[in-house]
Image (cartoon, rainbow, N blue to C red; front, side, top):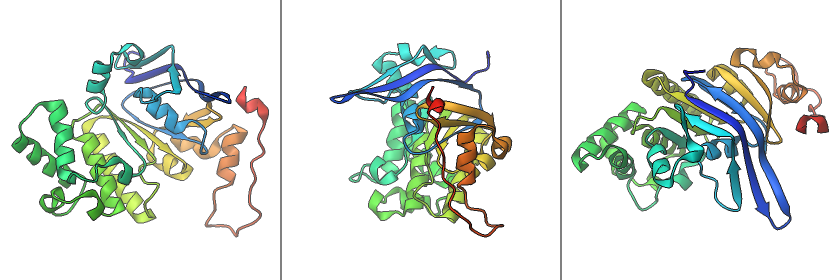
Length: 278
């Protein structure tokens, strides 16, 4: 499609270890426009590796190969290191799972957001500070001037996630990859953070890849869903049809979800078929 924002063809991620080669992502292909695309699956299914591979963040002994990873028509597999540095953050941003490990503990959160803006927009420190405070307000942080001067250990988990979202969105990228952005948060804060992401993505006309274990969340939040198993995409469907999925793996994941409108019975067990890996 000519209006593709991202087009991934035959993406593979391998890790060359002493015990042999481990295939983390095994020849997946997908494309997306300026939409909200969910990627779901169990731990180890290749979801996070897919997000990192798109940005070429896999380090040795990992290896990324693909026929093409085209972003707005540009093949990221052919991009130089310098070009990738401009694309990362400036055009494609990624929110990692836990802000405690993503934020610099010896810098204030405001200076980190301002730095992200200055790297990609080449502005002065005063303008960067103003934009960082505006971005903190945009992610619904009260008293953003005060929070600007806080250190990461002085903010809560939910606020830390909002700060990471502000940092990733301040350069105004075209695509946001959110890797389990609410995994460490309680349910009410999860809803608030997702609402912030939804508002900003919609207002800016961005694309979003949401990586998650939560099928119900993805079904209610995204436009389309890719289901991954063993490094492969086993099913693709519109989010509204996720609960009518046809693949037995997706059906097994759905069956394992607790139902509030029925008494608990025996725990559902997923019976795996080796043919799913073929």
